[in-house]
Image 1 (tube, rainbow, N blue to C red):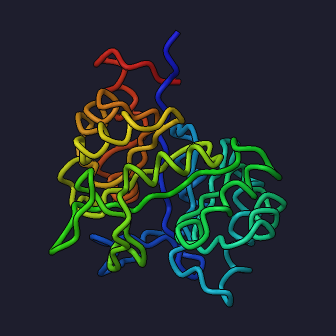
Image 2: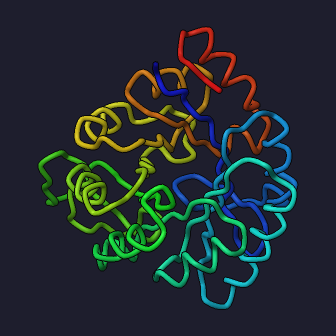
Length: 256
């Protein structure tokens, strides 16, 4: 029996407010995170993701408070990422009400962190976030995709497909694959990159970056995504979660 594809609104949170831009720049306010999360819960979202885009130590308590408030009002799973550096950070977020925790930069710096988190909490808790772009300049990777950090502004030289596969082996329960080239552009998901990572990992794969129309979501599901994540199209009223699920059903894709 096929696994139902999940639809996941993503809220980029900065100092307690949802923000959204293009390629992580020119951010504009999109509302209160808990109010938006509750709206998406009512629309039928399968999960909600919060990404702390400031991720500074001084702002962490604000993020914890957002998670606590959301956990009281939202009844779908919450994934929280951004600035997670240690097993203790994961423990604090889970105690605040998160169901899953996303890791990115800290895992690149120290891949053993993935195994440590999975070993303590189980791999179902751990989502590896991969901010990937097509290689630029004289960088060369086997897949043609490179892992980036700092909102896509800093290349690592690490092959994105190989990194996703390694992280899954280390214990990541899911891979959130965000195309930095497509992020916020409304030009559709990077289907080639999705297919490349899908071929390399057996864990659930979440597509992110570039969604504009219901058919973009259908195309990503057909390219192998187990879950479909988007931000701007939901925040600014282009689409509702129901619009996306209706399109997926009409295309013969199983949804919840």
